[in-house]
Picture 1 (cartoon, rainbow, N blue to C red):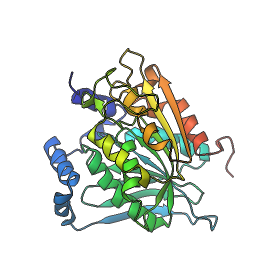
Picture 2 (cartoon, rainbow, N blue to C red):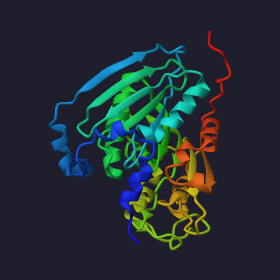
Picture 3 (cartoon, helix red, strand yellow):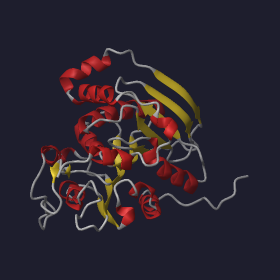
Length: 317
């Protein structure tokens, strides 16, 4: 009846290479930094560190004077580049361009940019959080300084996103938090995968106990859900949302970590306000929390949602 952190870690890091695991600082260090970034009164301690920006990337001058709209891939708790890698690879293949920008951020505000900023309409950014044992508010902190920097660096005022797990409610919350910041980029399209919008199994949610009403409102609401509900009028009404959730069909009505109720509960907040709202349920083994981001159906649906034409069959000169 409790959240199984060890099992979640094994599942979330399924695609991670052994060489990457050896680079992690201690769990205590990760938790301490995550806590410092979570609470506003302690964040000034993080900012005492002199910020470093490492630019080790290729820049392709845009083909068109029209502003680019990047697609930003975001992972969640215990995630990393291994979470979104297959999604990124699939999109670069469809675009027939292997280039993408990998941005690694840490909680001190340091950023490392590697790879290529491509010259097409939708450059791809893979955002990776160095300290990954972080909750909702720390991920929001990551996103606010990273998005502000990237928008200024590459001159964009709109972006699309693919956000997995805790990255999903975080990007929704950031869009609400920054509604009145004049120079902050606005969210245009968001593909949300396995988002815990109203709790995690045995952390604010118990399978088959919480239910949705006819209007899609959850019967029991967590404090985090109430916060999103209070700020819903701050969300961009011109945005389009694709919400993807899983059900492994084991009688729990969950993806093993997030209940269908929790994942679908964001509909009540966003659907009446946004330009368009769509849902996709992945059922069976591929509906597991950390399998969905590798599912071909999910990739195909996301590409269609972003209106990315498949150019993989075109031979380059």
